Image 1 (cartoon, rainbow, N blue to C red):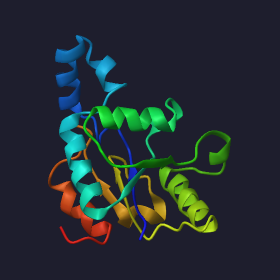
Image 2 (image 1 turned 60 degrees about the vertical axis):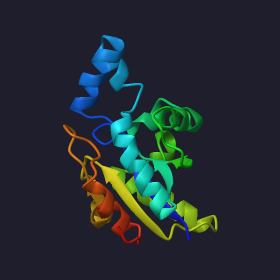
Image 3 (image 1 turned 180 degrees about the vertical axis):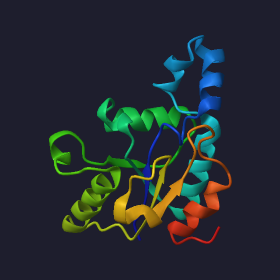
Length: 162
């Protein structure tokens, strides 16, 4: 069974608290905020992926500025031990995609065509631009990011009892 977490970064793995913690590390909170993720939030992602045996597909705008290996390294540095297996479409491949939900649906369709269908998935994002995929969203708030209270919601979306 293939389970995927479609993952946003800003507002999920970073928050206003991350910016404050980053200021202590770098002196400039934006340096941290745009190049690192907060281990406090990554712990919750780790629990979700371990319990559900889920893999991560990055749907964040960070996918534009970092290669897949770079995104995986950013997560590993913050304590994530799971697999980062892809990014949603961007650039020319995203033509016709008006919202993030369209990009995710294109990934799901491509996986189906390639013979590696996704059986269960959850979208973890602070935005709700998911169109018909909105019921699969576990929505965070930009100010606080991914919390322990989001973990059981994500696990249920992945078909796993919390």
